[in-house]
Image (cartoon, rainbow, N blue to C red; front, side):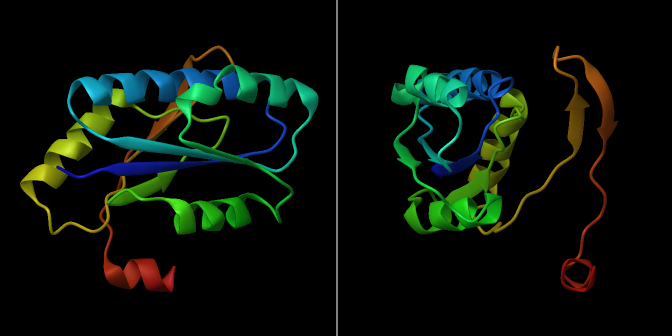
Length: 149
């Protein structure tokens, strides 16, 4: 059974980060019930006090929290890649949510096809109230498209 690492780069998202933390808390809890290991790593670039209060409130949800100035989102993600221990990794911004049922579908696909290295999917945009704005479905992807676009 594969294990997963989710890297969360963070900087000044006091209006959204709590929704992300609640989403990850629910995902981790439901995954544990199914015997799926999820490692959560948060890298915060010394956010404002409102964001720090939320991070502290959900400290126990995360396996690793690093609070130090970084060079931006991709620097934080790169630090997370070096620290994560899961068989698969992804990142989630602090104003985003993961589709929990979709995550479990991915786990099923990976269990049935352990040679898969990369999975991607669609995106649903929501507003600050959690209401769907629009959905962009995934499209066919090839190695050539990945390296040339």
